[in-house]
Amino acid sequence: MKSRNTFGIQFVLRLPKNKIDEMATVYARITVNGRRTEISLKSKISIKNWDEGKGRAKGKREEIVKLNSHMEQVRSLIFDCYNQLIQQSKPVSIEAVKALYLGEDVEERITLLKLIAYHKQVSEHKLSAGTIKNYHTTESYIKKFLKESYKKNDLPLDELNFRFILDFESFLTNYKPIDHHKPLNNNGIMKHMERLRKMINLAVTMDWLERDPFAKYKLRFEKVERGHLSKEELVILENKIFSIERLQSVLDMFLFSCYTGLAYIDISNLGPENILKGIDGKDWLMTKRQKTDTIVKVPLLYQASIIIKNYKEHPVAKASGTIFPVISNQRMNGYLKEIADICGISKNLTFHLARHTFATTVTLSNGVPIESVSKMLGHTSIRTTQIYAKVLEHKLSEDMNNLRLRMASTKQSG
Image (cartoon, rainbow, N blue to C red; front, side, top):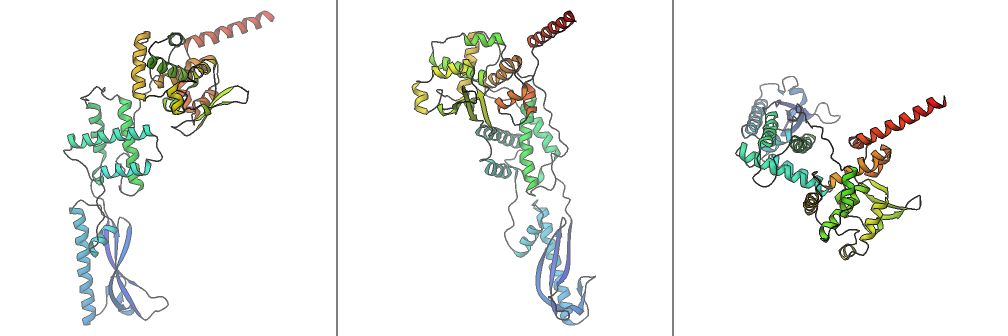
């Protein structure tokens, strides 16, 4: 980043209160980027012997000449401190210039990795474990980028510019994983750019960056069609019985998500205390979404109630105080792929797919209002729910047939 610092030095008197004709202390006033600070020269002069316009003492007496000479020496030393900061590529501020002049420790230069560490420190208690994991992944990509593209382990924060942002995006686009992971798609790249931007915003807020390198950058997310199971695919899974317990329990938890809309982490945290009698006297599921910390209340459908009863006496679930015998999300999704292969379903079975199935096939396509679906999904805004509100063809056909019948009935009665 090119330096755009403004810098100035002038000498002023600190006037004593209510004492017009007495001596006043001389101060060096330093201005950097519109901010200023003052340093006492430990020298005093009579107010009548001071030229305020020129910022120097008036007269030719020996003590006046010595004071003016001393002020020029101070000016030269302060200017040297300012230049030293620039030459060493350190952040230039009034605090840094003053500290260097006084021989104090100058604040250590903020770097990109120090910013990431600070963001982690202040955000740890605010973000979910999954989000923290995502930031950790972004951090690992940044480190690889610095090493491979810049041949560095870290970078001073004030060297970040628009080109750095574009270079990082290009690195992510062309990155070829050496393990089993797939290359990043556009939205995956944009999520990493979004997380980096949030950390850079923190640096701007903390006045660690004078300008935001993301100012002219636009995130470009592509609209993604939300996958879901059709009614026929859901029936296939419901009718499948596995003799292998691990596959059956994973399938049951997946189906439970299809009929409640809960995410994996929220199902993992469910205990018997989360099943309560609702306003209608029937069983409701009441919990709090870990991701958004919002309360979720879902009247239990028959299919979900049966699944809960099947696990009431499960030893692992009873020992952990949960409704289901929980395993890691990674293992869960691995078993779901196995289940999909066995059942002849080509779609990628994940808990996200189950949540989408609840929103579309189970609720919206059966006439449940979007406002109700939004509440059951625990969305903080109905706009989030609208991404699920696709009109399924069979529902559209059904609605139009009903309209034809009503119109025909009206015509006949007329």
